[in-house]
Image (cartoon, helix red, strand yellow):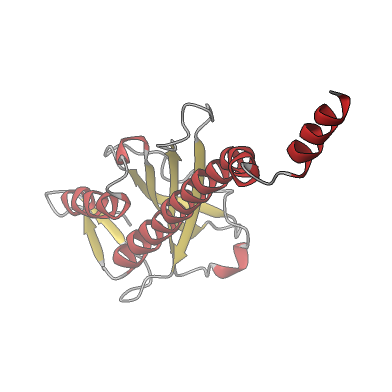
Length: 191
């Protein structure tokens, strides 16, 4: 009887049947986590790139104008928001700012508008967001786009509770004039 039990034990120990199934069962959760992690990372990188393209596009389009009318800004903001689609653009913050130098050589706001049509920075207020103030000249301005987009992952939002926030700043010099003017419907422009 003992010989038979020892024989059965050796056969069971040396048997390779089912090893692949056990290894697969052990590796499957790891492979699934890696797969969905790669998918979410790819989606986040795509959204990050779309945010960068959106900010650069808005700055580029605004810098190509001599005058920007407030109604045109609504169209520009709407067009830039479509770049981020099919992701939800409702959480997007967009600000378009014209920055000039004051008499002391400090950067101040020439004019500003955000996506909702309000004025995020008052004209004449100090503008401290520029990394390098030497890019401004006394007779010119800079077009600055500030963009913040909050991305909530689709697949892993049940596990990752905090959204990812992408922030971009894009700067352009005006192309056709030294300062891009903001004008209202009666053609009254900034100075």
